[in-house]
Image (cartoon, rainbow, N blue to C red; front, side, top):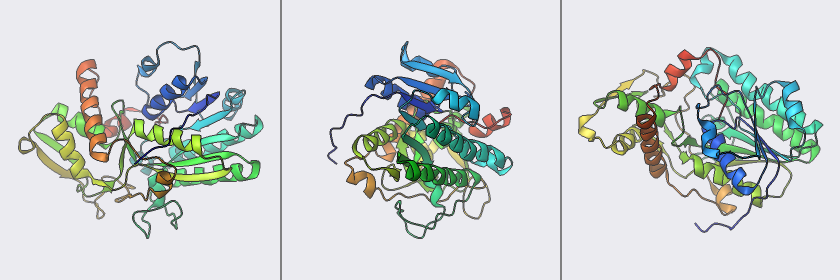
Length: 352
């Protein structure tokens, strides 16, 4: 698809959750624009070396803290022109036993951010939502106007509630706001998610690969760089006020089993040398409670703006798997899956 030649103007930007792997990719581009960027993050899921990719910049300010801390956010918000609200839980399965984590990071933090924006007259917000807000829709592929939206996890419910909060503020006060419904995002700096976890398992034991669920859940997979490019593109070309929800990802879906095959190939292993083991007995085939079995995007809205991802899902998965493996091999970091990371942490992760 031909793309519009767009330029995103520099602006003083607050990025909540900016130390996460999506946040890091976004901050890198904002600094390249010439923007002054403030990152607010509690570092609960950030990699220790997250700042190294930016070098030394006098236009980057980092503040360690919780986006649900109203007093802190009101103070930090002063002087900004644009907010990108990425701070969120990333552990959908972990919400089964600790639903308050998703409520705090998804609902409370979004209300706090919006109230602080209103107080300081900030009128542009990019909100990180998710394709899981659709639940099990009547129409697949699913467009932004399809419904009813019936989330199937605390995480998904919190994301949808966050969209509603943003919509109320945006329409009341004339904001220009976006709810970007992310596909499954993959990238070389990720420390969670299915691609990351499959790589970790294969690095430990290249002869056996455990897959949570029965391998049939199917999602759209998008590279973090493409996701960031899509958000930037929409913000550069859309001028209307109110809240605009947008699916950001490729057309089509890939099953978890196919993801596993791609990861095996990307690590240079022969498929016949790896025994796949399915773990789980859920009737819907999911790997954990709240694992939506099918997310499939109708991407007409983003394509009508002149944007499509540079990589298809296969390319995004292969690139992410290769980069994650190289990172672990080079740094000698502990090999931990998302489940193991959850067990090791007291609180929920809030970086994206």
